[in-house]
Image 1 (tube, helix red, strand yellow):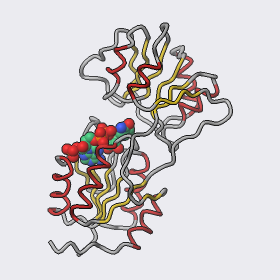
Image 2 (cartoon, rainbow, N blue to C red; image 1 turned 45 degrees about the horizontal axis):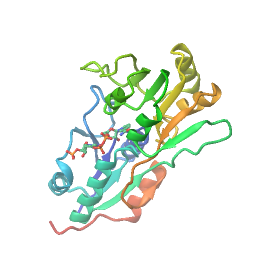
Image 3 (spheres, rainbow, N blue to C red; image 1 turned 30 degrees about the vertical axis):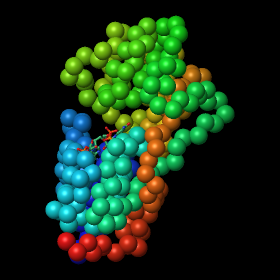
Length: 252
Ligand code: NAP
């Protein structure tokens, strides 16, 4: 069986892996969820949209003769990671995850760690503030339960439907961001508190460094539970893993 890698993307790290894989001339397909209007163009054949759960992904793996799946999704894309885990188990295909360690607080950080999105909403009980919500489009409306605040929403695309938050500003921008830019953004919008996910990695770290520099509190949402699968930390390590795991003969 020939090698055909499937890269589950949507992160800075996935794009770095795609670049490396393309430069080595390996056969690979890059997959996006299809949530963003104009996703970053990849140097690999690219598909967009859900597979239809773990069964749909298993079928895709069989149909496309995928030999290796690399889960390079965001650490908060837990559903996709569980689907990949189950589909690879069902098909006997090799799976690894390209992951990044969670951020750890350092001296000067003022974090309140909460377990999930609902915890972040609850942590915002109290008087009106100006809140930077660096969470993406999907979860912003959950903060309507704390309507007293002014929310600054940083989104990849302008929202099609107005956010259900009475007071808000929308900033349309795509990462990676830098500390100077995020510091200026927080100052411009008079941000009092930052809400974000513990994404880890460098692509999204600027906001916590900016918060530290401005002595702002951060409500840090902890990572969801992910399946226990092999993990590597760099695109080069993914290629080493591919080399060490010759193609699966699934007998299909
Ligand atoms: P999720 O909740 O784990 O996934 C929901 C569904 O979206 C999955 O069941 C799957 O649909 C589809 N999907 C997700 N990633 C996909 C991919 N790479 N290719 C094809 N289908 C995919 O995911 P999410 O948190 O909404 O994230 C969606 C995408 O945005 C991911 O690619 C992720 O890497 C990226 N992203 C997420 C975050 C975040 O904070 N969650 C931040 C930055 C980037 P089916 O069940 O139909 O297959």
